Image (cartoon, rainbow, N blue to C red):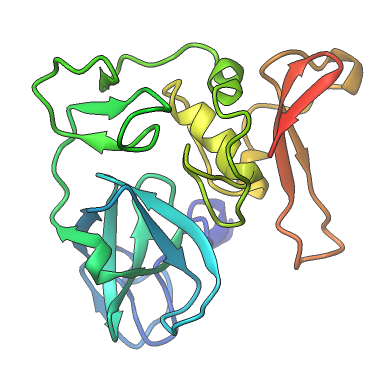
Length: 228
């Protein structure tokens, strides 16, 4: 057994100089520290690959989603998006302290906040649904996003990339929603092309090209793939 059998290295808050406290004794680091909880304070908050201005956007944090921060550099915090495990840097100005326990999720693509954003509410808004009351058809959710802009690193109903579309459709149905096509490929089991049906995931990967992060979509019907 190796460490990656039970810890996804893409989601581990671990660097040679610093790792999160729960990894003490599991991964080598010069120091270990407990994380501090924050949450997305804006509709969407960009997650970057590095602390420097101009760094590549690798994902986004939706309003209300928790972000566990471990380090800071300038005006950005380094940590992990709790909902999908993405590790990166987020501007502190886009975050609020703490991780309130959400009571509802945004269930409409036309609400003020993006689909799947998390909120605390006493109800009464038909665009919100209680946590636990989810959609049943990921493809129907994805179809609601047809025509929305494509943008690399985005993952919301405002704009999205390919794996972000699949993720948001799955999350809206209360299903596990990995952020990356590579991790989405681990869901379920492979089926022959002739047996593919509505709702199945379609994943393209290229082990020979580590620079390519893959592509993913959803089967709309036996002959059509819906993807961004």
